[in-house]
Length: 203
Image 1 (cartoon, helix red, strand yellow):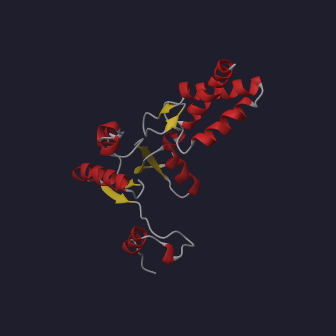
Image 2: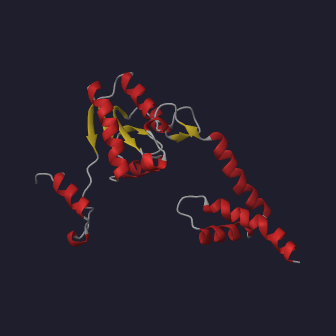
Image 3: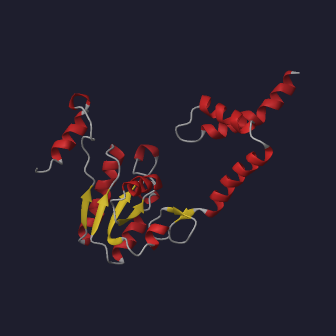
């Protein structure tokens, strides 16, 4: 009897374990997601699975900026109205989406797909840095904005790429970090306050 229960529970356990591999998903949340999938109809479950397989097969890195797309060149790189002389370097495709939501940035992007982190075994060779250098060597780029997060890994990556680009005569800038709108000074951490002072503007 116990063997039958184990056999019946195994597929559900495996499904939960797959969900738990997703970033930010703990086992309890993974189990809830697995039970939710089990509540779907057969057609809904198939559509869900097909969407995952289809995206995995068709979505790949843009041949120019390395952002995710189902075309050879992503819509941003294909947009002739974008300022191609300015390249914003980000860690992941999610960061591109964040910048695009502001509707303020008119340049183009380059996605690294990670940050330098020796502890995690992520070396510069594992990032899309070579592709960035090729873009710059092709000409037409005057400024590179390093928009990696203000973490030790983000700062190390920004400095590493900056050292590579300086000899090429490219202007390299760092995204300014400081106090967000509505922040209360006493609750701000030291790094945030330092960055806020360092990046202060004349008014």
